[in-house]
Amino acid sequence: MNAPSTHGNVDRNMAMFMDLNVSYTTDKKRLQGLIEKAAHLGYSIVAINYVVDMQQKKQEIDKPKCVSELFDTFPIVQGKSRPIKVLNRLTIVATDPSHFRPTAVYKAYDLVAVFPKTEKLFHAACMTFDVDIICVAVSEKLPFYFKRSPVNGAIERGVFFELSYTPAIRDSTMRRYTIANAVSLMETCKGKNVIVTSGAERPLELRGPYDIANLGLLFGLSEQDGKAAVSTNCRAVHLHGETRKTALGIIHTMKKDQPLSEGQREVDDPPSKRPKIELS
Amino acid sequence: NPGKSCCIYILKIPIILKLSLLITDFLHRYLLCEVCVSDQKNLLLLDDRSIYNAAKAAVSRVHGDYGFALTSIGFSVKYLNAHTGIVFLRCRKSHYRLIWSALPFITSLENRGQRVPCFLNCLHVGGTIRTCQNFLVRYNTQQLHRMLLLCQSEEERSEIRKAVLSCTLMKDTNVDYEESEEED
View 1 (cartoon, chains in turn orange, red):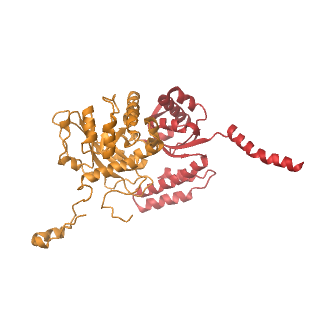
View 2: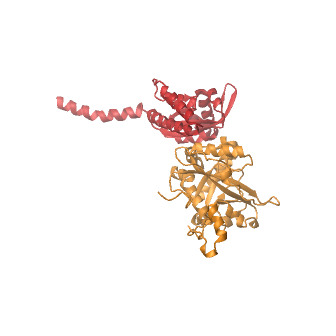
View 3: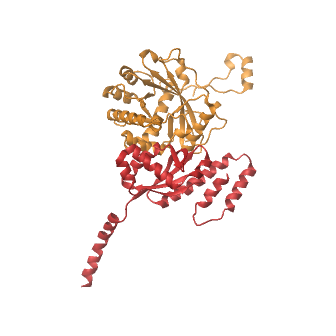
């Protein structure tokens, strides 16, 4: 694979583990600790999760912090030779259809997730919303049952369901809800299109990828589906997120960094002689 | 008739082999786990009893009486290195996934009244101790290479290399790898 790393943005390695939900905290040290631990455990990609609860008034969606500000040099992934990759993810907790309004701010994030609280919204999220991930409640009793038709619609569209395991680790009652909700989801989706993420706030709440693949046993996933839930399915989500930035997944444009001297010359040159910006 | 007895003898061998597999050899799985703690000094507080108890408690918490019953047969801590935090857990092959699925729910280990917040990270699952050991040797060399990258200067790096080379080879082959990690 000789493709330049700056292009395309997605590695083509199959056996990559990802954790697409690491909670955002303003505490920079803790966030660094989390990402270092994730790299130590062998996760190649992590996504920092910004949760916006639209029910609270005057909630505004901010632009995400620039990822490169976190580290000078990103930690190397265990067992690989390349540094860990960090994404930004937006989760919208929606109780009303008006809460999900795709604006330009959404495009600043690599992944967009929605946490529907009602059955109507769940249906809409599966069938129409332009999202990558639909969160499944793990810390409370399911407010609705999963129906076959919206779940099948989501699978057809390539939208994935997310289960996070941190509440299950913290508390026994949460563990019961997590397992009950996971099993009832598996009954309808038959183990397809599921990803398992951490949702960790502290480094000690992360778990290794092999452990999580095996944890699928409790959630009603088969061995193969459990492995896919931390690797190939996450990759599909990442790619799905990438296509939002492109025109129908075919054309991708990006800004080209130009050296300073060329930039100065640009002012003098007539527009026809300026260097063309390449499409890639 | 010597030919006949020979024939019987040959016929018996597979039967004996089969029986011996059924009766004496239980197939096991060895889980090679790493104990991750926030402070490396806390690792020295651990002993195999505390890990055994924590694992057993976690399995019975998640799987109830059934899980407790399964951990009471054939489950043991085979090896613990308190310096690097490496543990070998042994359990029967027939239900190792059930026991493994409870291990992520361990949040702390307790020893003599002191609680150490930690988690177990499974690195390898093997059928024999030997495959696990081979994996561990490879893993520890990998760790050493990762740590060498963190060295600030070339002097430090060469110092560590010298320290590694000066280690004497003891009976157990992974001893020298472990010692080298401590010095980092």
